Length: 437
Ligand code: HEM
Image 1 (cartoon, protein in one colour):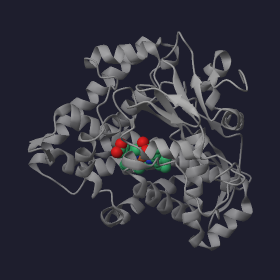
Image 2 (cartoon, protein in one colour):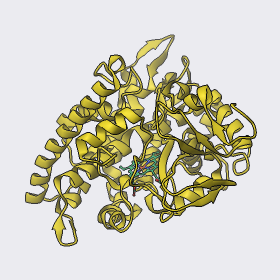
Image 3 (cartoon, rainbow, N blue to C red):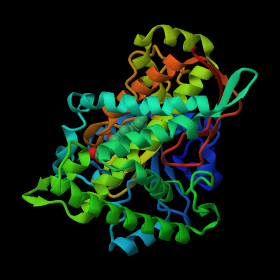
């Protein structure tokens, strides 16, 4: 740590917070956040040349307070995810001053945010999405069927669970709810990877790892334009022939008497497409890793499916796929003993909050019986994840299918996390398994 007493991180300690490579070694990352939370739970992170300074917030109570006080801690006008000076300036030059490339729910505050959120809020409620259970189960079955395609060794199958199951499944689901035909899924995946996968060389198929930040940004801008064009066509179709998917709701919605602009509609579709798959994939892979490491727990769960909701909830806390969001102070205030000035930028670390030992005893333990488990992986307050019921339902359906089909489960190699400061999780999970007769 830079210093015990001063609430400031500089040099390598500050760089470590924003370096995607540091998010690969989970235990080292949690150690770092533990040290910071214990010594300076609200600490200024300064990398002068690289980014504007921000306050890193690591305690559960402070992250909760910020999330729930949507008047004092705003999502606009700064970027809602961490960005460095170069890419920030480039985005502004493209959007005409907006620091967010995509204008979506996460970039809005009241009074606009609730108006836009209300448009789809009911659609995402359990009552509505439960009608999709059969459709989603069919997608889960098709995905789980692929387990038999894996290679066999000594009578057991071996596969990488991420590309085989946990990545494609939530993508199918989110594309289904957006009404995107299966034939276009790969294109959507490619676009989201171009937009959000730039930090890990294995997760983008565009050679981004060898590009300058400016080149990456240009690629991302192209991907956004492509998204907009794609969804403009989809909107036309959904206006002419509305169906029961969420794209039809967005295409036909009106705010203050008018349809949404193309940019706003694209923002809505993009946030759903992007927020809905990597996140759920990361929690699904994390749960599978925990089960592969603990055959007794796996056997108990196979025998008693009532344990499944606890497993799913704990997996979401334990993995915390959305690692941070940013907020901006609307007024001078105080937080964790520090003076926060109006317009200061804050990083709320969901990873650190969800591993705060004052709230979660033995936080690194995967404990499916943890109760209460009021984690912050879905955020809290006005922006709390719109898709949280969907994510839980998707995971429960998939695990029910997996538990029906898999007889024994173990790790077949070292799981590897992606390099990413924003949405993070396993990119590789080698498993060995046998199938039920
Ligand atoms: C395990 C899976 C998921 C996790 C961990 C997750 C996490 C989050 C988090 C942390 C936020 C920001 C909350 C805040 O600022 O307080 C968020 C927002 C959001 N999520 Fe999720 N999410 C998941 C799955 C989904 C799914 C499946 C969908 C939709 C298909 C979805 C759609 C959204 C949307 C639209 C927002 C923006 C809400 C707003 O700003 O009003 N998410 N999510």
